[in-house]
Length: 514
Image (cartoon, rainbow, N blue to C red; front, side, top):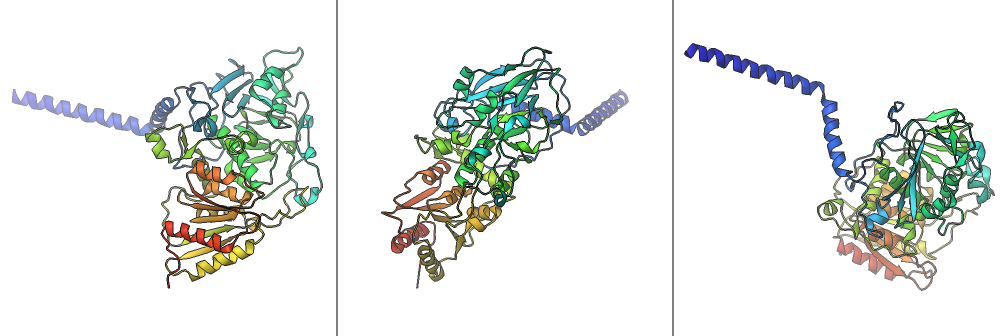
């Protein structure tokens, strides 16, 4: 009897071992599928209110290989899920995914085109997207774009902004033959793409040019398979306005849940500027619309709202009550009066240049960045001279240099921020390494969008330029901000040095000790 039990026990052990080996072999041979299943479950949890946002319109889609750059890992990232309960004029409404009203213009259950928009009541604008969309560059009137500045001196801005003929964009529909129809009417445009205060709303004009094209007429000379973002820039040589465009394009990409960074097509005819380097780093590739010499069709196209329609710009004329907070705090204690979105975007800018964003800053020396204003040729209509907003800028720089040279209590470096003659990567490096950033009111200070959480901002504001741009960015990022308001354009060095000394003492550098 005991031999029989021993024999049965051996059989059970053998079967258990065989089963274990089989399971081990199965799991080791299916790691991708298992990992995908786990990620899909997590994704469904985060996007329970957005189940059809990126659902393929074609049940038998042409295989699409994503060749875009991967999204970097950002410490301040929070999910961009579509939440219908986002309160209008809340921080998420202004800075995140407040585009929570979905309008399906064309629903396509077959292999035809599709088009829909997501409207934000807070911003009064929409992010729109479509599939099987054709662009005809010959029906877009504007300059080529992308030229060297020296070759287009004197060209008017009117020549650089697009004018769309009817049919500049078309969407494939199932019907063959018949009369072409416009995609939307004026009521739709006024409701979901209102002009607002913009005299020439190019995204509205683009959508207004869209026609429904029968499958027999929908011919394409080139297909772009990957998600592509269409962007129109206005004040493209000004850093502040360019940052509003960067942010709008980033938000559009995140709201649409793109798996990789999209390709980019400029729907304008502006010439090259140094700021183009950041566009190329933020997104996967960059082309100008008029660089296509024949019709081009997009499998998935996204229309980015204008930079004028972001909270960064709207905050200049309306009250945007938001304070910066860390993503960890907001994850644990959600508060629609606080945001980490600008911090997230600043990390995106730094990561795009290859700078680490998850490191803990170890201060070996205090870097004091003094942002200067310099003469430079910005665009074809520019005379190459900037307007002075601080008449004694050099005197202030010399006073700060004297303070740092004679300080014995801690190591301090004064950085001469000649941004107009620095590559953008070095500008971003100077911003992220700065303990204190000082400067007169000017577009160069917009770089504080990429500053680290402990950075202190000191803005010197002349009487003629009392504007809230950088106080607001500092507030929305949670940065410590100080201002010196001048009666004119002259800053008394002693006043600036006293304020600067107080700031240095507050961050751990007591000042001159003899």
